[in-house]
View 1 (cartoon, rainbow, N blue to C red):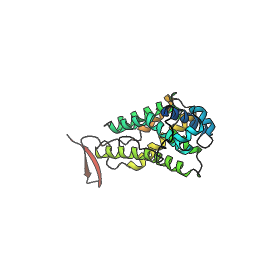
View 2 (view 1 turned 90 degrees about the vertical axis):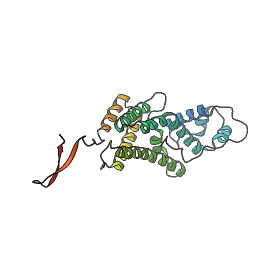
View 3 (view 1 turned 30 degrees about the vertical axis):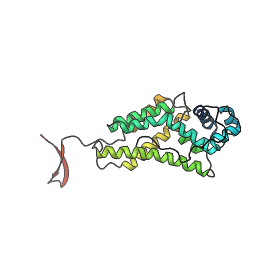
View 4 (view 1 turned 180 degrees about the vertical axis):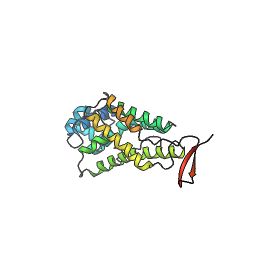
Length: 231
């Protein structure tokens, strides 16, 4: 896992004359509109004004509002989250990897340079069931979060940093749910310090690995396994 995947809606191929605006800047401005208003309430006139382009240029460059929205979400993922997910993958120690990820997440979710809270999570509250392609793309992105946690936890079990009997599927879902909850709390104004306390609490969910040198032995009188320290 090198980074989270691209959204299911491919970027629209521009038509006509070469564009005269910076696409990255336009996407960043559109991101702000979608975050403030939500996907469906955001009007094309509001988006055009924020992006400082006229409607024909917007449609030529991005196709429609759904494609613009998902490209803005992908821009958000690429700029603010991919490096954090990558560090979780690259850090060998599972506890350090998870602690760093959630600490960085708290910073991203409360950054003054980006709308508070995660767009992938918050956007889901503003999309009706009728907008199936957007809903499907957002659902896939949320599933990727769970899959990233699951892949990293499975590796930790293989590397014997977590017990072999760790329920990695449930733990991955729990960690992803905590991340989603942190996003909502950030949107409601929770500070980075408070979110980092939640992140620290989340780390207590990681099961302790078996103590080195412990060898399972059977207590014949009791008929149950006990552990005896090697001398």
